[in-house]
Image 1: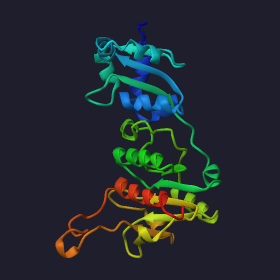
Image 2: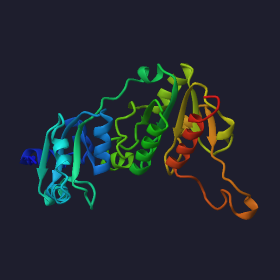
Image 3: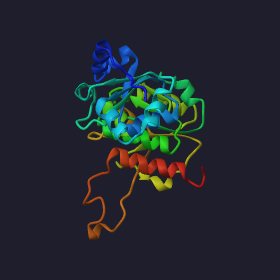
Image 4: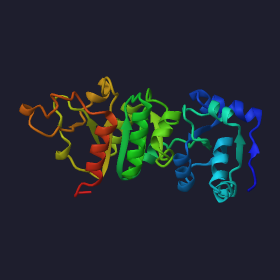
Length: 279
């Protein structure tokens, strides 16, 4: 098999900088790391993959298994393929046990609000979600259920943070996205006929089972610690809660678990809206 060319010192320096949010946006690119995620991105064909980087250990493992065709297949794509030593790759990777393959992709441009709102279906909105794993799982789930887009509030962790990207398992870039003032976006959406559903178990909330898709629906998940912002919570939108199963007298209700993880709660409601008989 033909061996990939070596990554240049300048390329290595630029790649190291991509761990920082300002650098990702300055360079207009981000990293997808891990065999499964990279292969999924290549299969999707949605992201613009600038080039691939393979570690020496990754290449050796393929060689030992006589998988020449795997490397030939990667090198036969439109994007260049480079190799680096295993120690250098570990410096580029965001994980302690790196798998030896990453893709450098062009940052997809945000979608204008008018484009997101000029359609039907379900949108997912994240209000100051801080945990990258939560956001990544929410993105992956939204892609699985075929949502029409993602709206991220100012203050939500970066959609292209390495841990977010890793948690999406290759779903990064599948859905249109926008980072904006969420309160203003929701007000505008409401004026255009969108139904806004707040994932909030506070006073005035109703079971998510009592709600159904209106044709244009926005599901809004709040911050892991503080929930939804006061401005959004007080805007008069419908509040949905996910009720526990069981009998409180037996200790099998919310009395034993304070609340659901933000990504879990949003997944339950997404599933309900996307499989509702009225959809």
